[in-house]
Image: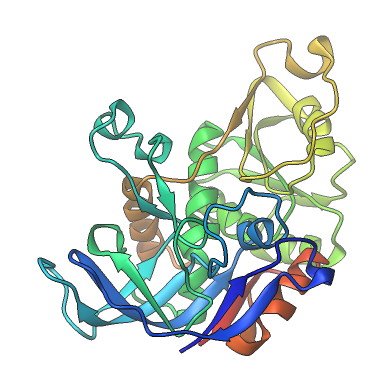
Length: 332
């Protein structure tokens, strides 16, 4: 099968990915073999390729927004059949018995494992997944539209929960790419007022078209104080303006797995009056099921830019250069 591997982690200009021919994997007990139809291109893939995240598996195949079709089942798998359509997401495995797993916080499991980082992902023609972590897919979407829901949508949903947006509240979104444009729609569907702050003129146009109340530059304050904010851009310098834009008691959630250094904060200007900052660590399977059920009941407009599997390195290069409006996807 065709696949991509991260063989020389580093800036995209140095060619960290290599196209290879690899054997089709075999599903072990409890696993599904999935023929990949579409795989989303996520900024986390870029962090894996560019060595922003430490290497967990040398030569790993990236990709964790996989829409595919089950073609074979390992021993002891029930509830699935060949031909079923499933999603493969970032969270791949947890221990199931630690205090985090037992309390519904499996995303914090110390033994958690991740698709496209600890194990091969979807930049390939086939992938395997433990059946217990394969996700059902909502109807009413094309494959291209489904793929970004499986990470961009999921992590944005988790970030929205962490931001504790009050009913009918004002939400600020910093950065407006694959994840943010989906999260904005979830917030809008729940009755929120959304203000988008991003340096991209094209992203500002998309935000307004989707129903944002305003769209301005990321360094400028929004037109009114925010109840909550989510930082999607991996830029630590934006933490200060985002916190300063919060009203009293507001919460800033940082959605990325990687963030550049945060400059020093001024307590009075940025944190006083019970403003708070929260990180986001993956999502639970319960989050995934809840979000995908929401997406099935409220059709989300998913803006995608398609690439062929053979152009995965170009897709990541475009993402690194902020040349993708919406979400890039690989058609396999």
